[in-house]
Image (cartoon, rainbow, N blue to C red):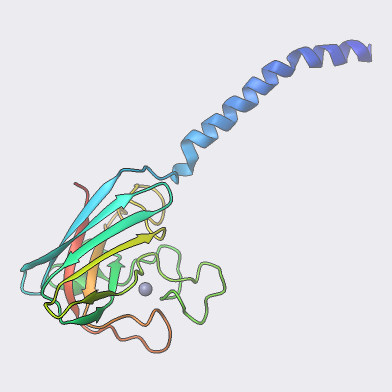
Length: 193
Ligand SMILES: [Zn+2]
């Protein structure tokens, strides 16, 4: 009797395997909406507080994160904080962009004293400083996994109110000590092509 039951179960095994494989495939495909779509792009035209175009930032999604390519002109020579902010607005003034883009409720800065290898390792929108040459131009490439160009994940730049990128007057200290990055000297709403 038990031998026959075993035989029946054995004959069902291929069907069970196919069913399990199918479910796994479905789960992988839906990916919880968190699988990046390599090749997605976005761009932000940077403007000065007077509304003059002073540069552009290009974004490109890869499987591991987002490549950020920046070209800015008209800056004071030296370091400037370069940070993605939580609202896709630069008008009526740059305060409209809100605070740093912070999808995980983290502390600011890559080297904040609270950082213990958990979610406190900086805001999703925190990026390294850019440095302007004596002619006021700056060129910088970054790679970050703190944001995504896909819609859906909580670190998406295209959430309900969008995102903007801002160049600040002074360099960021990355969370070490008192940070005062001064005025917002350039702002650009991040848009899909
Ligand atoms: Zn921050």
